[in-house]
Image 1 (cartoon, rainbow, N blue to C red):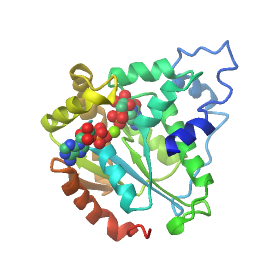
Image 2 (cartoon, rainbow, N blue to C red):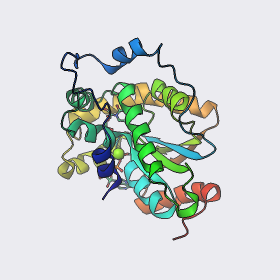
Image 3 (cartoon, rainbow, N blue to C red):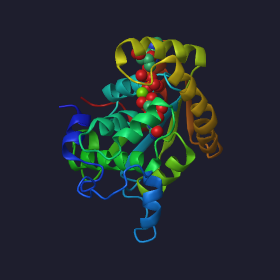
Image 4 (spheres, rainbow, N blue to C red):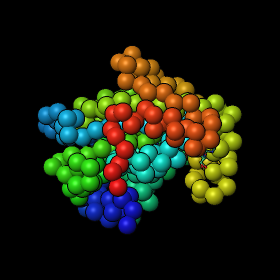
Length: 254
Ligand code: ADP
Ligand code: C5P
Ligand code: MG
């Protein structure tokens, strides 16, 4: 069973949120959690960066992040978590209080309130680590994650690194808007995604420029960005990614 399906089966974002019929589900989670933050201040990241490797994977919409992550997991012992896929799964989950919120944000190319996305990622990482994989050194609370399409805005990144896990670096795929537009319109013929249309794509490009590029600049200043040109073929891009990752992580043994 694919990992995402397992997570959907096992985990809910907020287990008892559906029980409270008085809850105002139109209120953004950011507002809700602000009221509980004082009593539940986190004591630091949940996962220890000496045991858990996190690579943030960024690039514009259609740059090929998902495609390259799928290739990376064939060669390297990483689990691939796409923030967008997790959000779409939560949107589709029966009883989710966030379904409509996620749908409208995705369609409009806006960033979903970070509490939702960070929690989904944390839950997914915990579930995978709890499976206690042993191949190539996993087990004993260890894990390796490609966190695809995240952080899309600076606060997401800060919250994740403060509360979930400090990242190793950002794998950044560069691509022109012209190429990305062609790829997304082509993908839109079969993806069934509500945001793979010209109008949504325009909004997503804008969000990317205005909100996500500052994230890249932030990590660049910390010398934490590994950049790969993603305009060439899937195989050519993958070859460059492999050159970047192999010295750090070694190829999978099986
Ligand atoms: P992202 O996750 O960055 O939005 P995807 O990996 O879903 O992008 O790729 C977007 C579309 O472009 C998909 O249909 C994919 O098959 C295609 N694609 C990805 N990488 C390349 C590439 N290097 N050359 C041509 N098409 C690509
Ligand atoms: O990465 P992907 O293209 O699948 O993301 C689709 C949409 O999901 C984004 O345009 C955005 O609305 C939402 N998203 C988000 N925060 C993330 C990743 C995705 O709000 N970190
Ligand atoms: Mg993707």
